[in-house]
Image (cartoon, rainbow, N blue to C red; front, top):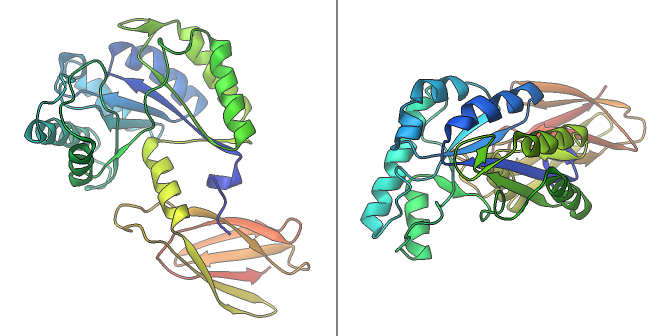
Length: 294
């Protein structure tokens, strides 16, 4: 079976930061990297707040913990499908330019800017996102509008764990700039996430969307099974060119298989069995998964 969340964790959580504010570079990114936690940064690459510090954003985006996401080119809103297309395409292209080491095309996270006109229908928005390989984050819910202390943020993490669900918190300014909250709010949240590492998968918007789409359409077939080998085929309906995140699988094995070798293509992993079950990662739609005893 496919685990609900990556590494069979109880919940998934995303932390987001809007508007490419200067304080994100000075006050947020160092805290994330120090703790090895993923942050999603919804940037407006056509505005001075981003452009004046573009070199810093390029350097920050080299870290696997820093994900640049589309928040439209100028944050001015859109009045037509044509304007939407321009706002999305320019911002996506800027993100590509800032992340030359990553493949293109690829999925990029998207967050609709707030407080500005959005004079296109949901259908027109979805068409624009699909054209640019953008995937929406959950609806904005965060600071400084909905929460007012670090303790409240801790409760959001606890609720996600209790429900076995997706949780997320969205920030604007942290320790400065606009719509700002104290840096302590952020560090309280990040320290909570570190403490709950065994239970919570800290994800990018894109990886969350990939995992859900792949999991929901996954199919596992047993191709063969004998006393020493189990051969499986994992597939899903998602486009493998864009949905390329390994899923976490849980597979029952004979009681005397205390250790197993899992091979898929050129990837080989040794895992220990627990209560007659092994956990491992496999990529849908590629090579068969071969599990051997020992």
